[in-house]
Each structure stands twice: as structure tokens, then as C-alpha cells.
Length: 450
Image (tube, rainbow, N blue to C red; front, top):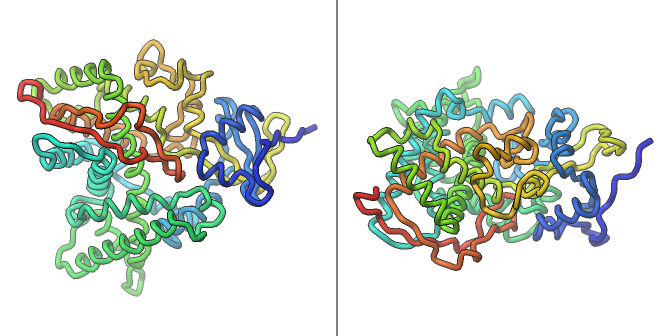
């Protein structure tokens, strides 16, 4: 005999908890957990959301196949205007897999990617000069659009990008406003910014495609491969509009994850100077013999790795992971109804006191032996999701952070430009980013220190 799923109190009659999801999603998810327990429900307009919380419930959530909990129906409305019609979530499953498959994410290719990333980090540092002040998020966003495009699409494509591409791409991510799960065409500023950015990115990529098609010997990067695919009549398998969407989607996850994580890892280290000193000492010792950054980035750098993992725990780039129940689903003595949105929150899970000691504190040692809190709670620590939909680029993302910090922290010293407590996350979109301004000062390290 099933019993009703507990329902969250409050919420307007017309919108339900939509405004809470848009403006205070973490507060909303905390209330569902605190009031309802490991399974609770709330309403977004006319859609019912069933929320899973706690490691045991989340394990059940993550282990379901796509014919039970499918991410496509829920994410398609939100992401279609960002990637374009017929791309990724808006494509059939077989085509979707073909579009998101990137050789650079395979373990066998990580060495080459690490070399590219280290070179891009050196190039970005060269542009900084001796000393100054930057908005760290803007700087990280430009750097990671170059590293992601170089590795995932190809060096020739990266060399045709200008800083405008990174800025427009950042504006595109504003389109992940929570209302987009229900209606992605509401007239709000976030969606207007998204649409302006998408039009401009399509124009920039169309210009690159036009040059490639006119070239006698075009490069054989991902764009070159897409342009080489032809139908029987000799026309392109994918029209330029679809190719643009594939390239935008290829960069999407790697860009927003890497930029925010890079910025937050450095700020958290600056708020914990004793641990920063440990990381810098570790890097100085590892590279004292002049060894190659790209090679070392694939090996253990334990102090740095723990710092990156801890920044991801406290600041996961996605606030929640929603899917759609395609069938009635039994969990314990509850029935999750077919058609409901089912979800869990990475941000809430990563600060679960039943999994993490003093969860609000930046404490990278929680990942080191003998504590290893992430290994003890694999469905509690989920910055990259879990189960069959765990992010394909998780290993690439960690390697990228190690390669960049191996360069940046050995070349520069940094200091916060504002009060430490003023640095915070911006939850105005489902892709979470640091709230700007997010400024730091820098100066080049002495030759002895570097």
C-alpha cells in the first residue's frame, strides 16, 4: 500500500515554487528536505516536481535508466534555444550520442589535451604582465573558452576566436534561468541576452565555416570533420546551423564548469592561506626539476587535487539535475507518478552533514587519507552527477584545473581585492557562477619563488 509523497508547504496558487527556484533554489531544496525528508514534492506552474535528497535516495535516482528517468524531456525546453533546434537534447538519442562524443575526453587523449591547456595558460599569463587587478571570473572564462575550444574542437578553430566569443558565450549561459524548464520564450532579460548572444555566436561561427569551405586544404579538427560529412548527393550532412549548435554544445559543459571552478578554487585558497602555501610548496617541489606540466597534470598532485575537489563540493556548477519520470516509479512505499519532474540537488547533497564533517567549511583534507569522505559517500559527493549520466568530462575537467594551476600559481601571487566574505555564488540561473565583481590582485613571483 503506497502512501502520499509529502508536499512542501507554501508556494503561490498560480506559480507554485517557480519564483523560489529562480531566486533561491538552494533555500527551496533545503526546505523540501527539512519538511519532507528524503522524498518530497512541490509544484512549478502545472508541473509536479518530486525531489530526492540524501545519499540513499540519490543512489536510486542516479541508477535509473533513460526509459525510467530521462533527462531529455526536461532539459530540451531549456537548452533548445541555447544549442538550436535539432541539436543534442532536441535530437533523437542516437544522433544525440553522436553529437556529444568527443575524442579529446578519452583517457588516451588526455596527455595531448594537457599539453594544449598548459600552453594556453602560459599564453594567458603572458598577457597579464607584471602586476595588476582582474575580474577573476572574466579572466577564467576567456582562458577556458580557449582551452576548451583548442582541446574539444581543435587548435585551428581556437585561433580564429577573439575575446568577443568568450564574452558572448558567457552571456549565452544566462539562458539557463529556471523558468526555461517550463517556457524558454518568456520575455525576460536573461532570455533576451541569451538570444542576442546565440545570434552573434552563430554569425561568428558561420564566418569561420565560410572560410573553411573556401580553403584548399582545410584543417582536420572537429569542425573539419563535420564539414567533411556529406550526403549521397554531395551536400553537407549537417547544415551550418546544426554545425554551429554542435560546436556550442561541445564547449558548453567544459566552459562553465571549468571557469567557475578555476575562479572559486583560487578564491577559496586565498581565504585559506595556510592551505594555499601547501599547494604552492607542492607545485614548486614537483616542478623543481623542470618536468613537463602536461605530463604531471595526469599524475597525482594531492594538495591541489583536494583543493579543486573541495571547491567543486562547495560550488558545484549545476544547482540541480532534473529528469522526467517516463513510468510510474516505486520508491520505498511511495509512487512517483509518470510525467513528474524528478530531481536532486548537487549543491544540497555536497553539504549534507551526514556525509561531510563541518560541511560549510573549506577543508580540502576531507578528501585525503584516511578521511576520504567522497569515497565513503559516492552518492553524496556528486559535483559531476552520478550513475550512468555522470559527466563524461570529469577526468578532463580535473586534469584541466591541475594543468592551469601548475602554471598560474608558479608564475603569480594573488590577493583578494574585497572582503573575503563578499565572494559568493550567483544562483540567478541553473548554471551557477560566482557573483561579479569577483576581483583579485596579482603580481609576478620572484625568479626564486617561481
